[in-house]
Image (cartoon, rainbow, N blue to C red; front, side, top):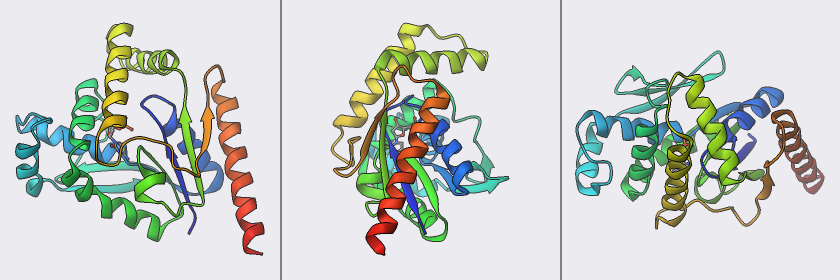
Amino acid sequence: MIAIAIDGPAGAGKSTMARAAAAALGFIYVDTGALYRAVGLHMLEKGIVPRDADAVKQELGNVQVSLEFQQGEQHVFLCGKDVSQEIRTPEVSMAASAVSAIPEVRAFLFDLQKNMAKTHSVIMDGRDIGTVVLPQAQVKIFLTASDEERANRRYRELLEKGKAPSYEEVLSDLRKRDYDDSHRAAAPLKPAEDAVLVDTTGMSLEESIEKILAVIRQKLSDKTKEIN
Ligand code: DC
């Protein structure tokens, strides 16, 4: 099995890049943020404040999260219900970030992520894939872009979905989430020591995908040479 880890801050284009690369290589694309989002959504539905670690931990026993792949697309299920669309709101983004700082939540989702990579060649994106979940990954990429460019992408995505937040709100939410994700004690967002840093500021989508694929191909061919 081959494992490729793509980590980076919110809105860096991880899911777009990972999906495109997975299609090109015939791997499964696993979006781990969706798992944290499902847990965050569950807490919101139960009226639990996602930052209230004690309440979240207590409720965790009632949470069932699973992944299914339909025509290569990941679907995330919360207690048997497909919530793949519902988890894509700014409220759930913030709730996911809050619950993800709780070590018990990370432990709860760990095996599910790890097991995916045991049974399939995967491209997995998240915040701690190269550092914690798949430290043995053959390729690790840390993907980023300027705050403004990432906020702008998120802002346009939300507008396309018919939502109308202000750009300033999107930018400040994104900065808060990055700050919290990078400064938490449990598995903070940071590049693995052996990650390749890719900054896509100013690059088009096609250029970014080409760059990611070039990094992956190079790394995989280096690994093959190492083995032979
Ligand atoms: O990638 P995303 O925006 O869907 O992730 C939502 C939140 O989940 C993010 O703010 C932090 C958390 N997360 C994490 O802590 N570890 C991961 N591997 C993926 C996401």
